[in-house]
Image (cartoon, rainbow, N blue to C red; front, side):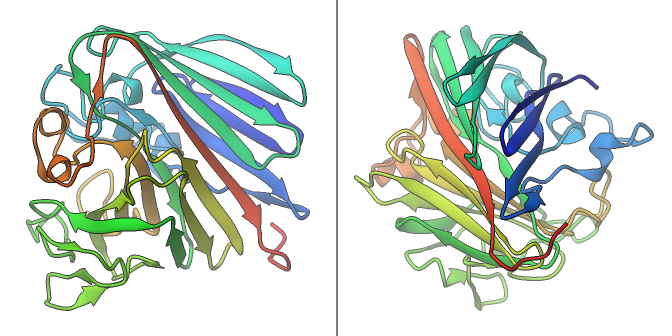
Length: 330
């Protein structure tokens, strides 16, 4: 594998150049070294075996990656989550800036005719990775999202900026009991994130992780219209720290939650991919690229689910972590 490292005082990150994933993020906080983002065990296993057709974004699953489109890619022929999450990025260089460092990368493929560049910025003493993706040119419409992933050894609590509602997909992620399990009700919608309908007739609290044992599930949170800032925060119990994302909800109006907690029994998941929460800030319908381009349940609620290509698009997100005082030194 080829990794591009970048560091400032108190923080470092590396980029997997084969897929653009943030492979490793380390933050120094209150005398501790935090590793807030998840990296799948098989990503570092040279002997790992994958089913035929498994896309690179799963083979290299780690940290955070940029999706364009988000989810099913049923328009331009790219793998799921698009070429930015599945193909090579070229370093354009790095340099010092006052109080920090920045590095830029270009995707070697185009997305619907658009060029895509990634810029990462680290500032001395800031526990954040500042990310910017720029799409120039192209034709048509594209959904996009970040795919930030957090691992919790022993669960945790979640909090969010105000949301209009939570909804699930039209169908569960895993419907065949021979392959896996989903426990949310599909489809379902609620304006109370503490009471998401479950398949057994009960409700689940989306501010608690995990909500169940051995399950694979997905829920979308829609931001409140007109909000100035969107955020998600994970308080990890065993790790005694906080992991958070920040976004502009006018640009990325939904946050999608992927609960991956031992609910897939087939390779490479093999029932062992547990305690992982995806916090996926985006402008997308989770049904895929084609669904995002047209009318859907979200657009009916006034939520935009795609970007218009042709000009210059700037998509920014911030990811960071901070230790809770008194937590374990690791």
